[in-house]
Length: 127
Image 1 (cartoon, rainbow, N blue to C red):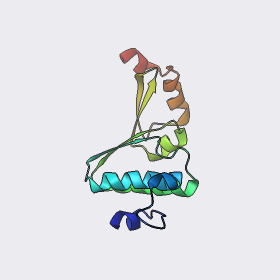
Image 2 (tube, rainbow, N blue to C red):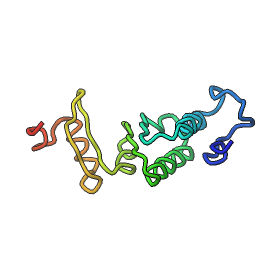
Image 3 (spheres, rainbow, N blue to C red):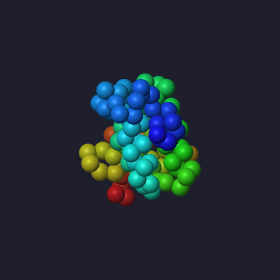
Image 4 (tube, rainbow, N blue to C red):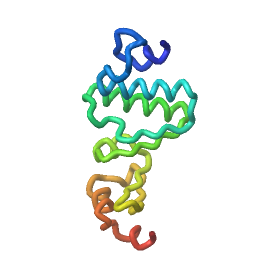
């Protein structure tokens, strides 16, 4: 019940099957399971795909909280504004290979897209 309250999981009862909950609430249920395992690394693969804006902001808040508690968070996302807004470091992949590595201060949409289309410049030659 702790995580139901902490993550504000909207469910009439904790016995309700997760498959009958909204997409955002299902995401929170998965995260609650992870939190109960006391993990140090969390991998989020497209964490906000298909969920509403309110649920997205809750997922972002939770990810930030995990980082502040000392956990490592690896987020895989094709949502470029999400990547730019949430990341300390960005690795760009194209055709299964890393084509760019950017810190949050240097990353912008144009540079990420250049690496995504394998037109990043010097970094391409080094890899």
